[in-house]
Image (tube, rainbow, N blue to C red):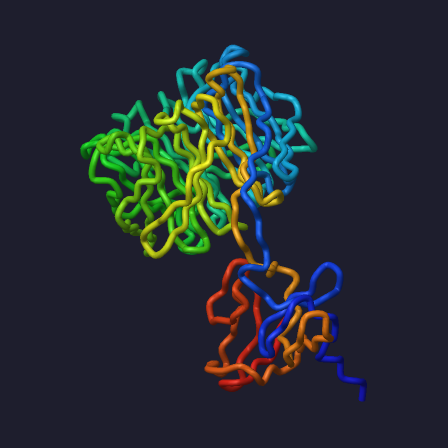
Length: 480
């Protein structure tokens, strides 16, 4: 018979370790107990960088996870209003840019952008002013610090405004949302399939049989649904949202739900994967145009909302909300009109169906407009792009949110501590196939997952890491 593989690993403890607790291996080979406060990051704001010298509007951003780059798409008023894109590289709180690349030689506006992670392509949707204002899309490929484009494809043969785009990870499709001025300004959607450097589309589907504008969207990865938020002009300009289900090259919708029972404008939507909630940020026109946010819960094909919360008690415009996955919090960027229109960011914490906020931070003391933002998962920072009203330039700044975080990653879980160990002492960790006998209240036959705070539970956390399988109420066979 061959020797049984070792089921214990011994190494120096980095910090004290409690018996029965999940552990990670650090870069230097030491082992540490998993903790929710093991990582401490302070707030930092980088130096702003000009990426376009001129009036730059409709700034929209996407993160290309394959290339590890961000892409900004915009209307370049200094170049005949042409649709233009540029690739940015983030390093800490700094950002640098390649050269500008035109994706549409005609005038463009109402730009939307999404990253198709299956095709590893950037998709830009827009209104093509030089082609009867038709809704058009183009596929971009990032290489190094540049981007190249395929041939633009029309997806709506009518005047198309308020264009927004989102990627459905489950269906592996890009969905365009827009105001169809050729059909009574109805809110409309269409599903796109990327193939190589081109994109094809299914049929248009109306999601709101009334005039809509200020459209934004997000993908709920837990429900595997897309959520679109908008101003419903057919219902008092109320803030409204609806859930969409992509199937093949089409999309169907549930029943619309109101999140703001008053006139509102400028929605932006994101999905908080930690709280498993959708967050909508908007300008509450009926409440002095205060910056406001609402938390939505998707269930099946429906969505419900908690009570809206004001995050800025002043006139606020150009809201953009993104999810910061390292901090596990949404970050809202906006123009604080109550403070000279300064470009500002604020971090929120979702709890249940509500949200609370930290103190806002000015990113740059200049008037701002046409704000776009994206989370760079590699740098673990938010990039905010805007039109600097004072300098009349397209400008970008990197925002590092303050947070405490876990030392658990998707790769560094090693096993469960067999015994307690003091800092710098030798720790013994039960690895794959070992049996931890110091657990309690387990359900035999149930798989348990490591949580970011160092506990184990039957539900996966983010990242999803399997701790092991319970064989009795106190014993767990370690996985790895």
